Length: 173
Length: 173
DNA sequence: ACGATGTTTCAATAATTTTTGAACTTAGGC
DNA sequence: GCCTAAGTTCAAAAATTATTGAAACATCGT
Image (cartoon, rainbow over all chains, first blue to last red; front, side, top):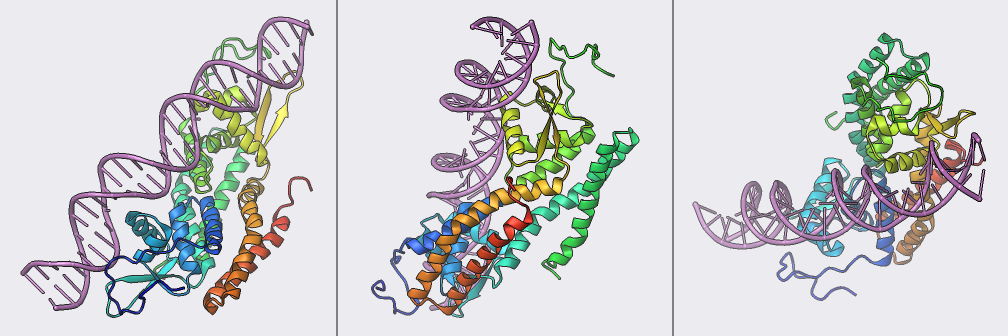
C-alpha cells in the first residue's frame, strides 16, 4: 500500500506524485471549508488546515501542494495566513532546510485568535467614531430612541474592548 | 432646510430627491459595513441597516434607495435579507400600501440570529460526516493523536448543536 | 376589472476575491 | 564564495459575489 521506494533516507529526486485526498479526508476538508467560509477564510487555507489536522505527523510544503493539487503560491500564502494566526506550528528536522507543519494543539484557541484578529481592529478603530456619532446626535437633539441605540452601541463597543484582552492574551504576552 | 412642499398629505408625485448620508451617518454606516464584512454580509445590506438604525422613525423603500443611492434591486434584496434574519420590522401605516422599516429592538438578538443561521446548518449537515470520519480513523487504526483530535471535534459539534436552540429559540417557537 | 403604485425577480454586468505561475529571494551544504 | 533546494512575491487570470435595471408580479383604491 505504500508508494514504491520510501526508505531512501532524505534524498528525493523526481517528485513522488502524491495521492489526492481520500473520501474521509475530503469530508473533513469540506467541514473546515464550510466553517472557514463563514469567516471569509479562503477555501485553500481551510483545506491546508484540514490536511494537517487529519494527518498523523507533520506535513511538508510539497506534500501539501501535491495532495491538495494547488499551486505553490497558494500553499505559501495559506501557510503564511495560518502561521500569522498561530494556527499551525513548524517542526524542523535537523538535517534539512524543509519545514514540516502541524496544527497547534488547541483548535479552540486558534479560532478565538482568528476572531480576535478580525473583530478587534474594527472595534478599536470604531471607538472614536462611534463616540463622535453619539455626541453629534445628542447635540442636534435627536430622538431619545436614537440616542438610546447609539449609547448602547458605544457601551457594547467599550465592553468588548475591555473584555478582548482577557479572552486571549495578545501574541506578545 | 426641508425640501420644498413636504406637508401635502400622502400624495407624492415627482420624486423628492433624497439627501445622501451625512458625515455622522456615514461614520456609523462604515462601522456596520466593517462588522458585517466579517460575516460576509454585503455592504449594501449593512448600509441599509445602518440607515434604519440611525433614523428617528421608520424608513420607506424609496427613502432607502434615494439616500443610499443604490438600485431598487439592491434595496429589495437587502430588505429581504434583513427580514429573513429578523433584523428589521415593518410598520404599515393604515392608508398606504407602502411599508416602512425599522430595526428590531435588540441588535444583540439580531446578531445571534444571524450567526445561528450561518453556523447551525453547517454544524447540522456536518454531524454525520464527522462521525463517519472518526469511525473511519478508528477502524484503520490511525495515530491516537489524530483520533483524539477527531473525537474532540465530534464532541464540540454535538455540544454546539445541543446549545444552539437555547441560545435563541428558532423562529417558530 | 382596471390602472397605478409598490415590490420582487433574475439575467447581465461590475466589483471583488482567490488562485496561479514565473521570477525573485533566502539559506544551507559543499 | 557558488549552487541548489525551499519558499516568497506579485501581476495577471480565473472564480466568485454583489449590484443593477428592466420586466414581471402583486395589491390597493376606485
